[in-house]
Length: 119
Image (cartoon, rainbow, N blue to C red; front, side, top):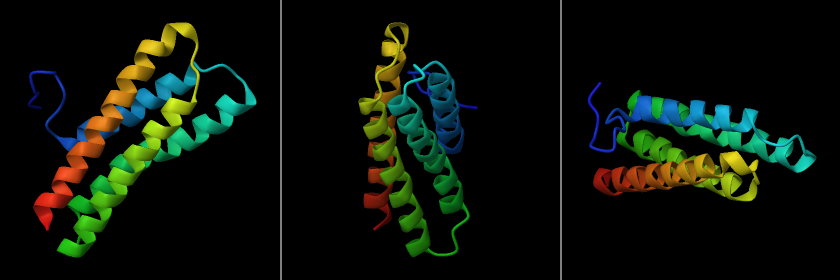
């Protein structure tokens, strides 16, 4: 697998899977408050949907379907960022939260660029 200078995979399928897995590790270490539990459920769904819709886009039957799936991936990356911003982690997980927010932001931008280039 090729990597960028930031050691992030070029392969978006792998990158989105890694993002979803990191989210799951992050969620395991959240405080057990009702708010954290509910927000974490939403975060898990959104983060997994980023990659799942990207996989669907790769298998799309038309350009219109491809663009729609990429837009959904972008939307789910934005939603992941939203839930990450709401959740208050334990003190030793704040840096990971910031890193995950950055990754969600980068994925949003990547999917946005794909949409623009596909038009």
